[in-house]
Image (cartoon, rainbow, N blue to C red):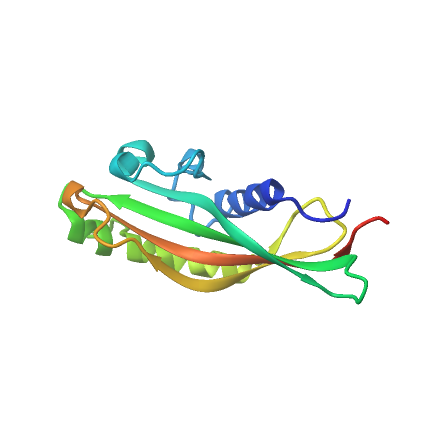
Length: 164
């Protein structure tokens, strides 16, 4: 055990979202990593009606001792929420007739992150999620009757030490 790995944190975020009763209306297979980058032109085809992609966005490391062998870790991820609706982009954003739109999913996603913020990661230190704010993809494929918004989160782990 030791430093939490990026892939382990990503897997823990996906597991948190897939096991959440709040997001049970999204099929587990539609909550997944943004493997190999994101094909924005075909995103709504890849994800279907509803989906969440988890994309790693970089990290920050801060030394916590004078000899710089212990570090606090902050890894950033964007959770990209996609909804498609045959009634058009407005319906994809806001939902209609009991169907969920991107805004609804984003609110549910925020609740899941705040309530389930301690991740299960194979490390000797706790890893916590923190909401950072929305990420807007300007005019992202609205012409296809779909909408996408991102929610940025930070996974924080207190100081871990390299073996010397």
